[in-house]
Image 1 (cartoon, rainbow, N blue to C red):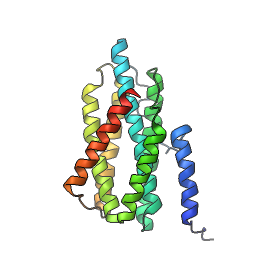
Image 2: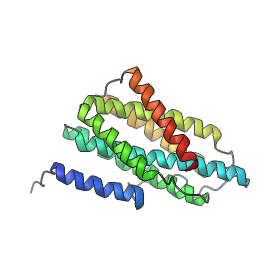
Image 3: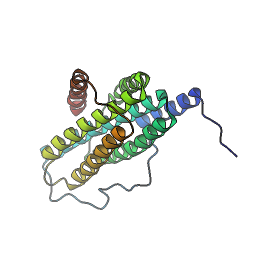
Image 4: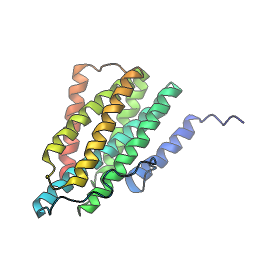
Length: 215
């Protein structure tokens, strides 16, 4: 028997559940194992090095909270079913990143960003607006977001202490996933965004990352 077609209200309820899980609970992940499972630190880190790793992983966790909201917002307003399904699939993989970063943040003895509810709400609004603009622009927004995330992760990989093999392994896997998400978004019909929009996205990203580093 054919399943019931979900309404906009259904998607809104699902989105609200996802928001609660993302910000306050445990998100629904895929079957992928944490890539850092069984990997140990290569030598002891100093207190300063451990603090640095903790702050960087807190930033990456906040970024995944924002990414989850972006995808959920775009899925909520996507016009084509295949685009919505692509967004939801990417969101599930982003949940893996969310769980991995959260676990590593706690292992490093620090906390996730206190502003996560703000990051989620703001990103949900941005994602919804991107979806309203049209699927090709929404997919282009995904592609550009993921490109900027890949560059951001590259900078963090350069800063992570050499001994912190678990964090490095997680970031390397995230980088591969984000690059693939960008490629899929373009192949699904995404278009290149105007240069001013890309620049504005970069500014917003810097504000979030610099704030989440401390708070």
